[in-house]
Length: 74
Image (cartoon, rainbow, N blue to C red; front, side):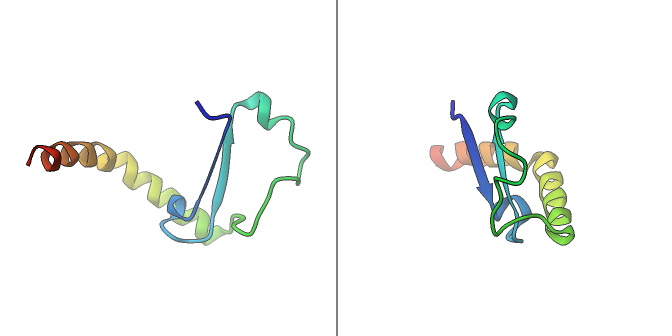
């Protein structure tokens, strides 16, 4: 299990956005404002991320798993 996961672009379907995930005890060690980058959030990118997450919650991941089995078996 990784200590920290960083992600960008795909979370907002290509719009400039990035994120960092980790356990709370690690994230609380950051000094406010010390972890940022060129993909900081803006309203359009954040709206794109919400829409992207909604699509993922609508069964896209499960469908990809099913289609992966079909492709591997075929």
